[in-house]
Image (cartoon, rainbow, N blue to C red; front, side, top):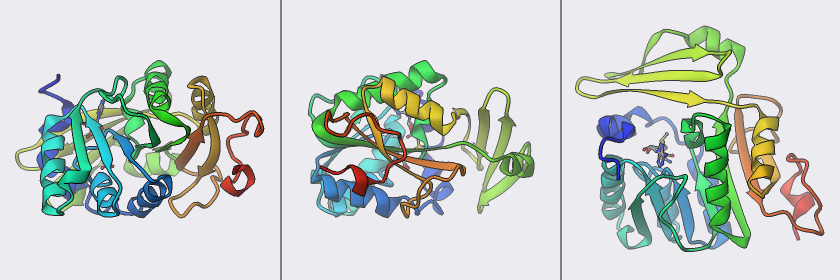
Length: 254
Ligand SMILES: C[S@@+](CC[C@H](N)C(=O)[O-])C[C@H]1O[C@@H](n2cnc3c(N)ncnc32)[C@H](O)[C@@H]1O
């Protein structure tokens, strides 16, 4: 197993760095509670989502390639007295060390953008699909930047949180964001590779799933071409036909 995973270098600053990212937590907790659990979270990180899910009484199996991130997730779960509900496993999300079938697989906070190309994204989606119960759901969020966002931030060092600096270098042609984060003793540079919504929909279908909802934000507003895409997918049902990828859940239940 990798003991020099990228996020090991910044595990110590991940929580302060992502301190302001709270908008997705209730959404994933709602999905987890509605599923009844257990939930597999791929790329679970420090448990930012997994621990609130466990606090809601739902068992979580969390997979991540970074032992450093998982160590912090373990501490967080113990601190919140939900260690017994959180099962953390070191592994690659494209080959998750999970034999259980579950009603929900979640891949929050754009983690799929770490997959460098469509082939790797498809491997990840297919691996997630393989873990689902027949009625199970895969929920993930990704983004594709606006031109304004690229123009406003390209090449600039921004102090995202006190003492934590972030720089985004955008390659719009390659659709790659090179993101560098640094604080006093921690630094890492990572690449994130985005796709359009139709391209994600195509990969979802290639993975043997259909999109039943595509939201534009965690309050479940419909996707309208903005930066954020929140996908809810399941296995196709004969009675439901192939999904357009944008239908509302109320239109497709049953
Ligand atoms: C942006 S963080 C998200 C963490 C957590 N899900 C959250 O919402 O805060 C991305 C995570 O993906 C993990 N990761 C990246 N590539 C991975 C891979 N191939 N397999 C497993 N984990 C991976 C990193 O170690 C990191 O913890």
